[in-house]
Length: 597
Image 1 (spheres, rainbow, N blue to C red):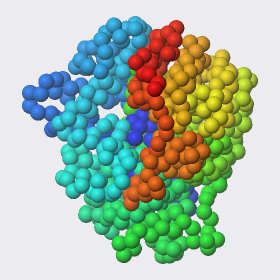
Image 2 (cartoon, helix red, strand yellow):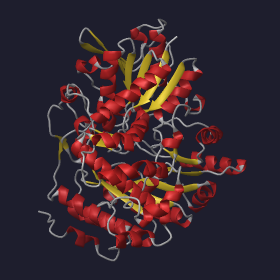
Image 3 (cartoon, rainbow, N blue to C red):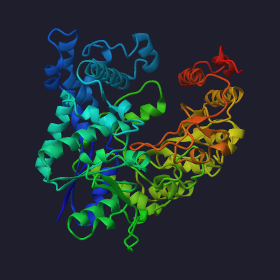
Image 4 (cartoon, helix red, strand yellow):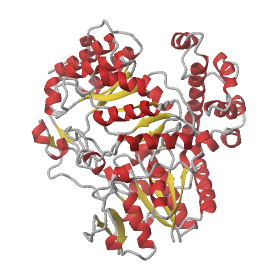
């Protein structure tokens, strides 16, 4: 029988495991297949940010190298929560070299006062690691970043040869560490199949480098790719060169595609009976969605086992600090257990969202008792009672039932996640959520304009969002909102009005954190598939399909102002709002010099 090793390649978050392999491991073991998992990202981070590694890459006499090498092991212990006694020395500035990232002492005094020693120390320690990352990126490996690797190469790669040119270069010192840890995992687990979960473009090149290495040293091992990046970028995959590195690529939820692949390797199924899987045959990419032979194609959420964290080094994850954005600070600090409450989005109507893809378009919710069962079991496994629900949008009715079940059992959890600003989140539900352990929510106000909210099918209004955010604020729950600019037909005046709405929400204290992103048209969204309906058109006619990655679509719409300048004004204004500044300044003043033609 086959044995599977699941790997999350470098790099994702550093404070908690990415959840894909934990769910796949639990399911495949339930089906009788021995399954192991590794988070190569956190393993590599532990090796790279160490005195042993750094002493091999810092040039002799490099400014600050001796102090950095001498402090790094202690800093890693502190950020792992293994030595809190270091907080006072780090905060006092007696342990670490001075960092240009941390700002001056007056900035830190304003942010933390005299009492926030641990938070201040965590920020300084994070800046210390980021300074090391800057050195590594400049002198050791230009692709290195603490939470991504070679993202600029992998994002929107139209052809595979863009990546293959990089793979023909000798491995960098950091890639050598990656491959050494991969070899150790393979030697320990003896897999016949290695599956790489690739959630983001910042994981793709490292996954390919690992696969390239295995093909050379262990050609007997079958290699499969899957995860969020393939699910969005490889729906029209035609470049056979990828299959010099991977034998199979699976799409959407991986439980049943991997199960069928294992059964195929055991001789129980033919290739034509695989599910949502690519492979190469005579230099042609083949794909089978479903053989139509009566085998199941989806697993009902209610029937999924609790994620299994065995094999993940929970004590090695780092609790970092972000000073500029309260939600980002929450995201990176603490060991949050990532858990999906319900599969897909119960709304799935927003024009900008990839609603045609399975992970959004197919909604499947379990019972509330099942959700809380999973929370209890995961907390026992990891030793952490904090949960980040990674749903597209947590269903309010299920949220209410989960909170009631948590309180009925007398459990103590802290949790947060994405919501829609639904009327259902009234004062009573928000108070219930707070009592059950909810500390923060994030939701999309998007364009913050009623005309545009209606156009994109958001299903909420600005005033409704204000009312709901106020309910959360009154319940002591932090609110973060995602915002968008540059949607087709959006005028400069509408953008200014949108920022004014955001300013008022910050001033009233009903929003504490926000982030603007520029609208991108994607091939899997309603706006990408029917652009004329939203006042845009495809720049390429007919639509150009690339042999490797396909996601963002170039489009044309009428904008009589500088979108880059507008984006900068929105970010600067919101940064000030999050720091309590500029709240009495009219929003229009942030747009000085940006003129509508």
